Image 1 (tube, rainbow, N blue to C red):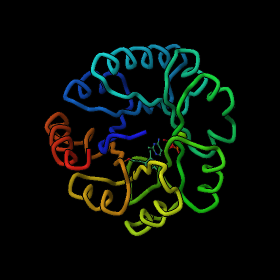
Image 2: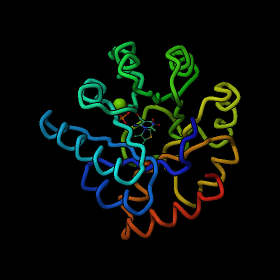
Image 3: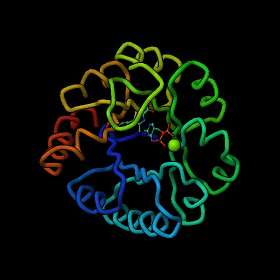
Length: 201
Ligand SMILES: Cc1ncc(COP(=O)(O)OP(=O)(O)O)c(N)n1
Ligand SMILES: Cc1nc(C(=O)O)sc1CCOP(=O)(O)O
Ligand SMILES: [Mg+2]
């Protein structure tokens, strides 16, 4: 499986509607603190938009809803993974991406046979409080050696200016939130990301 080098993460279907038609091919819907009705609505609408535009949708956290609504890719962190029924996810034919931040987490993740491993935070992030210090670029190369052929996603504080370095170290995809959604012109920034990552696609 090959992941697009530009991995957009957003917190609503409204963002997906706005940005996916620009040519985004990999997007994660990462919604926090919404009721189940709203979650289902946003997931289903996002699926429809992504299908229309040939974009892979990845649902963060809500693996049960993903199964019930027929999604085909979920992302889980380590705490999510500990509570998830991975066999049920697999039985539903859903692909799985897993977060890692240290050696123990990588061991746990690899034992679950994921479809990709994410490493973060590469740089400081303002999106959420993290208990891990920034990993730095060299850690990406270490992780790449350990995951072998498995796709590696880099996340945390990434910008267009930092993207080439993460790919050069062995990341297949760069996952991004703030650099897009806090930009004064998100559409322009997405187009710049797509152009800047073209050589890695
Ligand atoms: C691509 C990618 N990598 C890491 C994360 C973080 O997942 P998690 O640790 O479960 O934290 P939350 O995003 O759920 O707050 C991610 N979502 N995507
Ligand atoms: C959601 C998330 N998970 C991380 C991890 O290291 O697991 S870093 C992160 C935030 C990514 O957002 P931004 O691009 O704004 O820094
Ligand atoms: Mg999570």
